[in-house]
Image (tube, rainbow, N blue to C red; front, side):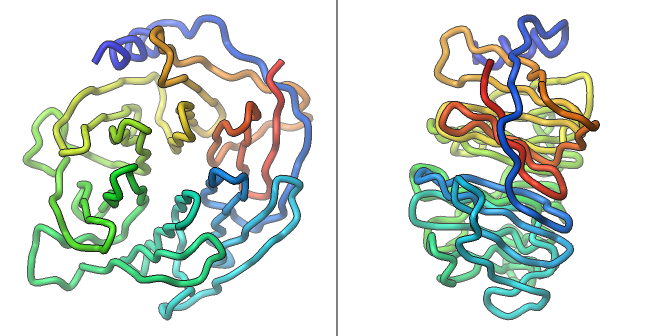
Length: 281
């Protein structure tokens, strides 16, 4: 809780000591990118909601693989809203097909989680917006149809849901994306707030910002939150964890930010058309 209040104070007041990053490179070419993630070995996975495709890039920007296209069969998508990857697995949030598709790291299909037509109300989710997996193998899915998080085990078996209308101060309103820390805490972007839950679904913190957020990512110890035109980062291992605004140097035009993350001491920023890579100054 100490770290949560540290962030809360900084967001409510002024963000001191902004961190500067210099543009180094641009990679990728997309039509309308919606999300991205980098796995521990450095491969970059990008979703595109216009082409309904998933593209894998190496760190130099070379295309390693591309799958998808519009549809409802295995390895096809209808609005791939989000993506999450670890060393061995990739989870794609297939929004309009009401499912999460799991692949291996090479994007070979494994299985899917789809429960919208289930007779068990507690496990249903529709129009999912995001999905992540904890270190314990639990899968957390952001269910926009019911404004809650639905939790499954690594085999796709339902465990619980939380954050719904009956969660009082921790009830989600219009959540857009979630992330999971190395300590298995869940962070959810909801309007101008970041709402935190522990791995069991108990509310543990509520962070209020000065603007609406559109993305949240956690890679190793680094948390990155974005709005349409600003980026904030925090080191979750720091005893004096603070959320710092990022200043970007080297840009010729105004950048509309889709998402951002820190990996290998570099800042990766996703726009709708490309990925921009920045070095810390």
